[in-house]
Image (cartoon, rainbow, N blue to C red):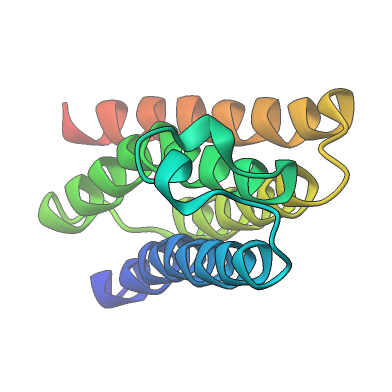
Length: 137
């Protein structure tokens, strides 16, 4: 399989992160326009923003946690020539789980539902790790 195909889910995950940054800007602007914040306070205290902003801000922090492992595993698979259809399918499933996690996180933020997406994404990373480790031996 052409290793370039692995770049697509990696780029999709990056796009999710960028979309969250755009949503953050939009929600901050809306909070400012609605008079929900004190600019001098929010400039120094990120917790002073309304819940709608905090949800997105927290999700952005999440985009720099386990997704980093996803990027590393994807790049390792490309570098080591281990890209396969099963690995590619798992990569897209990972991105889908992260999108689901993000939608819940910035929406209802119902933790039991959000946790399901998180556990699925972690399981996928573990499977990918084993596949890449086994293939590199």
